[in-house]
Image (cartoon, rainbow, N blue to C red; front, side, top):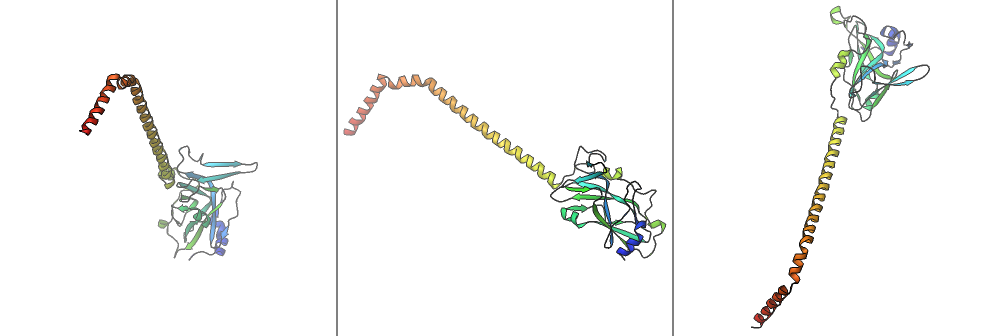
Length: 258
């Protein structure tokens, strides 16, 4: 049976906690779930310039605090770390999901939908932006929910999550699994558009060269005609040529009379 908001409120301090330096102590209850917020770390695919947790952040600095904005481009994957440490008792199991406003933007959870009994640590969400625009997440934004449900009995030591210490950051193994080219629809469309532009440019260039070749051929023919025009003209207007023409005409007339 899923835990109610009242039960979550009474057990909240045993289920969610924060870093001592974070300054956050209050946890939000949303109906029958606990609200999870965006943490400090995020990893995004598709940017060859990005390093290990460095230039994936946009920083907005003020005198009192530093707010971090994570940008997940359309068609790219991302890893998002929660701000909260989450505990799941041995007698329970937890389920996670995004808030509806991010689902409507096209953000998809591809990392799974449950948290094992005995878990202790921050959660890492693997996400994919299937929407038409980039999605921006700011540190501290409400972005996910977690529900708790009872098991029929406490899990034995063989069936709980064994951890040496709580998970605090995004592990390098997660990033290695997401390394490489991501052939998203938006990136493929961009490449197709680039090929189309290159093809159109090549066609226009071919047409230009065809016109240039035809014009050059025309100029060559004209120059040859002009070069030999004098000799041909002299031949045409010579007396012998005119006399022969007249003779042929007279002969034709006489033949017709006969």
